[in-house]
Image 1 (cartoon, rainbow, N blue to C red):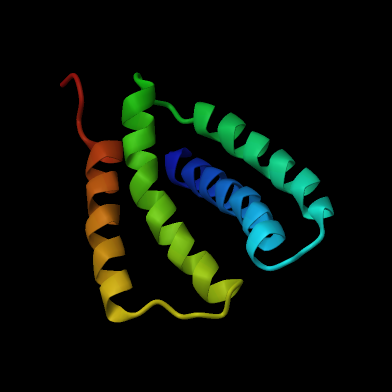
Image 2 (image 1 turned 60 degrees about the vertical axis):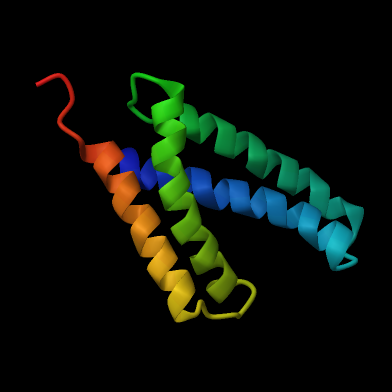
Length: 108
């Protein structure tokens, strides 16, 4: 099943693209950060269309839980701020919901 790796690719592409804008506008980085950021956002959009889902809304809903977990990993790995227990608990709830959506036995 390629859903989880594809969602992870989409999540880190989206986070990376958005972080490029954050770095430019909030951290005073060069506007040259925007070109790779926009390419990363295009990769995000492409990756999300590769998920095997019957409806876009279902793909986006499942993606939400993966995105939340990925955001906390980004915060820890890139921004060097480990998540606290509330971050972890909230992400666990969201991930559980995403996994229900992804692996639900539909049409059986």
